[in-house]
Length: 262
Image (cartoon, rainbow, N blue to C red):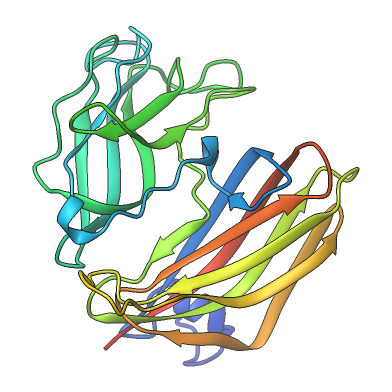
């Protein structure tokens, strides 16, 4: 005997996440930067965030790394990258790793990269053994610029931590929840910025515009909007910057975006 839930019986957030609201979807984003300094920087692993103009779109690849992270090795055997191409469309590709050599490049070219994760591994992961052996870096096809990092410090994560997103073509976005944590001995200033028109090629350009600013934060901070912030149109960057009151601090950000098809 199967029991079907009454329409609308579940909370709206659960119905949204489970796909019961056609044309709507949830994007869960989180980022971390273990060395936020006294000037504003992105909450992304390694402080890496690339936002080139459309004319500088580039193929990407996995940078040469640990020899075990290779297509038949004990570590990461393949890595998936997801971002935006020069037409503003969302693109996803999976690359075979090549250990101590750089991988082949993606067939598509990117102007934004907002998610990277290990797609397959040679190890059945446990508490003691992760799904990759070394840190995994994504770089441009020329090998001259790092774009993203999957960190191995402390424990292999198998997932990038990028506190940034770009609204793909054909969608608008709303920001729902924000949650930040930081080392409690530091005061953190946090800014939420957006910038629309990422495909613009000549001035006047759309500005990078402050959406929310929170100062004097310590330890943890949570913000839920009764009315979600937005809408933010297609081809809009959404991201967080932070700075610390002294020296450096480890800062993380967690936020939810609701995408609506237009």
